Image 1: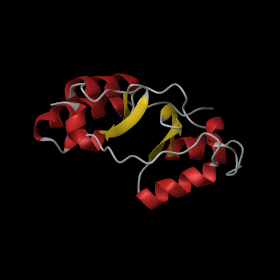
Image 2 (image 1 turned 90 degrees about the horizontal axis):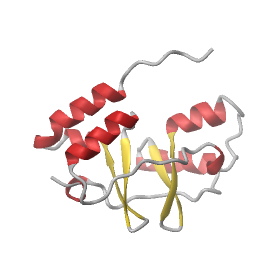
Image 3 (image 1 turned 45 degrees about the vertical axis):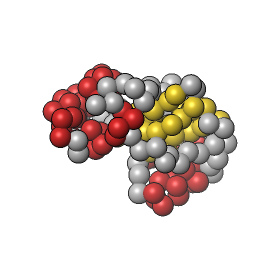
Length: 141
């Protein structure tokens, strides 16, 4: 099975200069935990609810700061023709729960760990990925 078979293709993204508050409002309205950040259609990052909490609210307390200051900029992504197994391996090794799908430099979809889990043949891959993603970390001092 390929990512194009399970990905969400109607993806809402946000501009790097949008505010963190705008990103949080998009997440709330869509009931999601992350939003890809794009310059036009070109992905430049991803912002998660955790980025907002840790890098914005807890650190600076400024919800009006631009997304590019708190987003993860070095994104890992898949391609539409990538196998579900390969995507699960990438997600596990990078400890990520969401994988943007990019084709010809354009964001065309996103796959979440949940997308992998609801497919009959990919539930084992999702389980393996979740096990690797969920490795406990130590609190920062």
